[in-house]
Image (cartoon, rainbow, N blue to C red; front, top):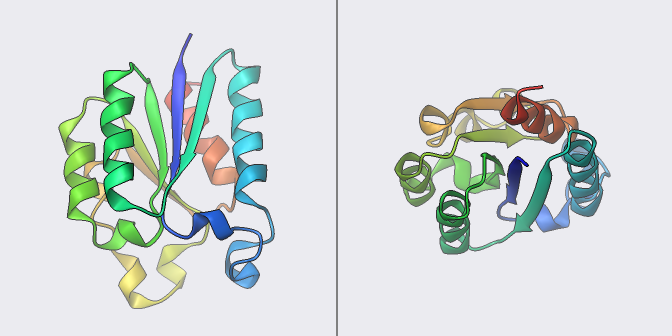
Length: 143
């Protein structure tokens, strides 16, 4: 059975109430339910985690490799734009990672236009809202 890890970073625990004009009103719990239901429908397991702490996200990426996950869906939030620690963690493991952003980062502030994670990720999805998580899981599961 394939296993997918879904990681959410800084401030994503506030989805649903945080800047709804940018991120919508869907909660993180709702997103986790949607991607979990999709994985279940494909006979795959899904484990979801959220942390506001960079080091914990690094440890979860390491854990994904050590525990045989087939891929990681990662929305690192603001860490995407400056976390060399997350970049190096992704580069150090053989597990494919797909970077997800709910909003279109290229239609926002200039500082959001660059992600230090993108070059070490399998792919990047941005601007598809919560559906981006399911699209990323679909790509990792090959369906």
